[in-house]
Structure formats: structure tokens, C-alpha cells
Length: 579
Image 1 (tube, helix red, strand yellow):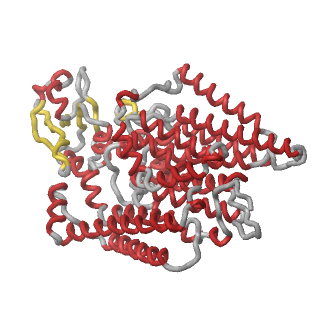
Image 2 (cartoon, rainbow, N blue to C red; image 1 turned 90 degrees about the vertical axis):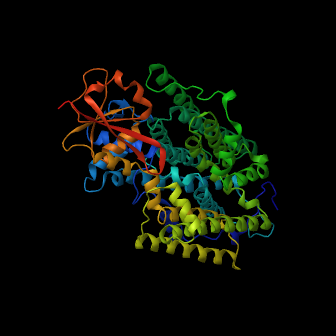
Image 3 (tube, rainbow, N blue to C red; image 1 turned 90 degrees about the horizontal axis):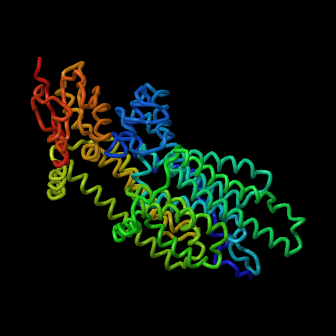
């Protein structure tokens, strides 16, 4: 038997995961978080505010702004998507219309991850051991089973849930990174007939990633992926030449040289754009001497769980094939994002881009796992997610009924002023999801044939269960605690009708919330003549220097409005008194 690969997989282990079940599973993960909630602070509502400004014609589409100030996150493409859907779907609430393209982007991420792993698993070096008397997994069935496992690994990652359901540029970048990984995996496997189409997909995803505010991620990721594909084809060509079959091997592409040119062209274009000022120049955001290594390490542990233990196992078992495309491509993609996370001020959002590649690497651990390790993963996952689900149900029951008293008191302390709500529809969805989890656990511990993707079913289903329970049972509480809606509506009740509001020192998130939830017309304070607004809203930190921008003799303090769930965040309201 051929023992050049550590993967030992029989045909019985690559039975197909039912497509309907997989689709319903993805739908259950994607929809909660995009439907029925308000925009949350801070990045979610900030990006939504930019989209509102663009849709209303108050902001340039090439230079997104909020009240004349540039958007906090660079890259116009994500804002174009949200603003365009707001304009195309005026009959929907603006926040729901803006979320639709981002829901499609999350679905695109899942699809690209599946196909990326599928193409990587079809690589000759990724194939399992050939048995002496047959019975090993067929290449196509093996690749499909590995792709199912890769998709499950991505959904199981704890860090994916919240950030992938926000209307922010981060989700657009995640989708484009997964598309670039898929394109590179296809290029490593494809032939001349489909190379042009795949290169076009790669180019479009790279351009979209640049327009999403990540030009240097595009340069490092794209050049490294293309270089790995180029080297893989060169090695394959050299092996065929040595074997004497190079001239007759129609499956070996002859277009690998253009890949090197495409890599060089990408880097040169971005360098030229940076010199011309069209793309922000690369810079070290956080010096290595200032990096909080322990905090970053903790983020890596929980954000990428449960993929990272499997990734380490993959790198160890496949250590002799690290330069082969099925390991090299996702390893490079993950490395770029992990290093960017280390140096970025928003580490979790930078690390989000590594999850598709980490999921691909995690999938290749499964053909080498022992049965005892697989059972350990199952039992740990069962206890962890069952405990989390039970806790969510107990706290919800305490919120609604007051029993048990201690959890109810803790909720009242953390969210003063919150009035619990009961929704029969949300309760029914949560109960159905919990029933499905119980059935899945019973199926998993039952006696039936092994499938290579079975070890990741419970982690992915447990992550989906907890996210769905949070987005149903806890949704009113989360909206109360994470939305600017309550404070915006309270301020709006103090504003005289048909008048504008002068704002000073407010963040873009607060401005967006006042515009959307309060339906207020806002003007920024300036050092010159102030607009004839009747109300002034100020942050406490700007109160002492307010007289430098506003004539305080014309204003009288009226109230301090605090977020009921956060006493540290407040806004000061003034009323004009000069008649």
C-alpha cells in the first residue's frame, strides 16, 4: 500500500452529508442576527449610518462620510452595497434592507469555503492512502466529505458568530478573502480550459477586497497565494518531465508563467497606487514592543476554537507536505490574517479573515485522527454547548418569570429599566432549535457507520444553537443593552418638531442612531456662526471646551440622558433660550 500520505480513509467514511440538511443548517446559521434586531453599537450602527447618508444623497459615494467627517472604516464597496439596497427596497425598514447584501456575503463565505476545501482535497498530495486490495475513498467522494467538514469547522468557530452578522466592511473582506482562497485552490487544480475564468474570479475578488479597505491584505494574500500555485505547478511539471510523461500529460497546465506575472503586477499596482495616494500606505499599526501578547494569545484561543487544535494537528501530521497546495495555500492565508491581527488595533476583526483558511486546515486533521480523539471532541462539545444552551434558557426563564431569583436579579442589575418581553414566535423557534440539538446528540452517540465529517457536526451545531438562542430568547435584552435606540428616542422626545439638533463631540455611532432611531436632522457645531437649531446635544468630555464652538449664553442645560444599560455613557441636552 502507498504510505506517502498520513490520511487513511475508506470509502465508507466519506458517505455524503445530506444536501438538504446542510442547506437548512447554513440557513439556520445565517438568518439569525440579520432579521429582527436593531443596529448595535459601535461598528454595526456606524457603518449603517454611512449607508443612510449615502442613500439619502448626503455623502459622496467615493468618499463615504457622516455629517462631513470621513467614515471610520475605509473602503467604499461595503457602503455601496448597503446604500444601494436601501434605495432599491424603500418598502423595507432601512436597517433590514442594508443587511440583505451582507447576509448574501456571509452565504458567499460559506460557499467559497466549501469549494475551496473541495478543490484542495482533490490535490494528488492530499489524497488518502491507497489500500492494497482496494476500498480506499474515491477522490470525488473524499473531496466532498472534506468540504463538508471544512464548512462545519468554519461555522463552529466561536469568533465567527457576531462579527459575520454585522453590516460592516469586515464581512465584505471576509467574503472576498474566502473567494480568493477558493480561486487559488481552483487554480492549483485546474487546467487550461478553465484557468481564464478562475483568474477572472480571483481578479474580481482581489479588486473587491481593495475597495473594501484592505489593499495591503490583498497584496500580501494575493501574491503569496499565486506564488504558491506557481511553485506547485512548476514542481508538478518537473515531476512529469522526469517521469517522461510531461509532453503527453494534458492535465498539467502550461499557463503557470502568467501567474508569476500576475503576482508581480498586483504588487506593482498597489505600490504605485500607494505612491499616488489612491491607496493608504502600509504602516506598522502597533509596534511589537507595545503588543500585549497574553491578551492576543487569549483571543486566539477562544476566537478560533475549536479549529486551532485541529490546525496544529494538521501541521504536525502533514509536516512533510507543507509546501503542497492543500496545506500551503490555507496556511499562508491564515498567517497573513493572524499577523495582521497581532499588529491591528482591532484584533478580533482582523483575525476574522483567518477563519476560512483555519477551517480548511482543520478539515485535513480529520483523516488522521484516532477514534479516541474524535470521541473526546464529541464529549467535550456535548457538555460545553449543552451547558451554554441550558444557561441561556435558565436566564431567559428567570427574566420572564422571576424564578430563579438570582439570575433575574443579575439581569435587573446589569440592565436597569429593562422590561422583559415574551414572543411566542421567538420562543417557538428557540424550542424547535433545542429539539433539533437533542435529536442530533442522540444521532451522534448512536451506533452507525462512521463519516469523516462527524467529529465536527456537534461543534458546528452547538455553535449554531447558542447563536440562534441568543438571537431569539435574548434578542429583546440584547437590543436594549447594545442598541442606541432607547437613548435616541428619549432625546427625540425633547426636540421641538420641525427643528434641527446641533451636536458636539458625538461619535459616528451616536450620530447614526440619532438620525435613524430619533429621525432627527443633525448639524455639527463649528467655531463660526451656529445653525439655527433649537436643541444642542453634547458629550460630557466636550462640555468644558464647548464655549469655544458655541455661544453658551444662548443655551440652557436641560437634562443628562444615560443609556439605561450603561451608566458610564451619557449625553447632555441643551435648549436654546434666545427666543
